[in-house]
Length: 388
Image 1 (tube, rainbow, N blue to C red):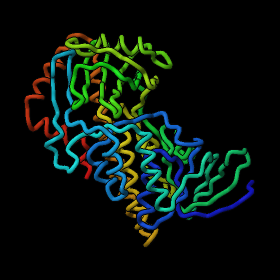
Image 2 (tube, helix red, strand yellow):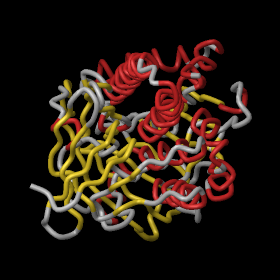
Image 3 (spheres, rainbow, N blue to C red):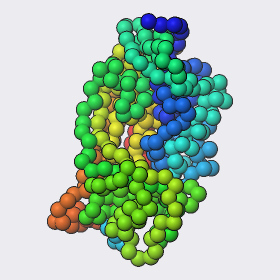
Image 4 (cartoon, helix red, strand yellow):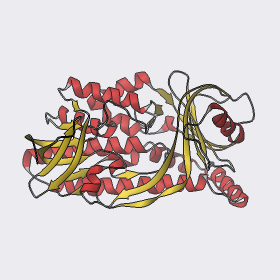
């Protein structure tokens, strides 16, 4: 069955932001973890780009936050508009955090910083390395891995942590249910340089009879456009994205895409794993929960899963008290359910079909937008400060 046999305390499968944050937080506590990833190198296509205040707080001890602040764009305002009409404005500059803004910083830059800091602490990632299958008992998890070639090698770990995304092999092999569904519509995503009449101090969610559209500033004077659509091409073109902007965006001022850096089409699910812990197997990030990009919560929730799990694992390795891992699992399961419910509500509200429902929605959102306690509460929730 195997050609080699190596033992490790912790095996992390997946070196996206979640896996790298977990490995870095453990390394900071003097705990070495083995990290494997099936991608040859940082070939990540999920492309999150929002870093919220709570994530900047938890990454501070790793030294990553200063890197991200130097690279990203600070955006203090989130607005919901119907074309030129502002329905709701959320100002993050009043939240109770040293990071009173949303930071727009693409996922590949977040990963590069996490990897650099992990390397400085002596950690690394083995790639390409694929988990073939696993067998767990009360004391260990035995895994078969292939490294580049097709010869499986057996390893054992005391704890196996799946940070391997929505199609998690760890979750599937551990037979942990992943209840939920997919949204009917596709989402399109494009990073562009464009003439844009609105301020780069705001991320804007546009309501439209066609569906939702989000426009957010990125570093290097670019913008990220995300929109729901019924009939998206595999790689949306400039004319396709321009038509989305023309039909849903502001009418006052020039809106013209000058160049396209990257575009993609994807389907979104809303799902939560039945548990983030099954014996010696733990799940973090998209392996444990996936949801709509509304509110930019995904990468943030995963990184926060990881940082809190590092605390629980380091302490458990030290004294053998596994009750901490149960407490971690219960807490992060609650957070995941809350995030999925909130982003699902935001998405369904933004994509109602009937003109009557759209008119009622706009009135309700505009009314709520005039209530300071509602605005303050929503700012805290989006910044993920409720999860401290």
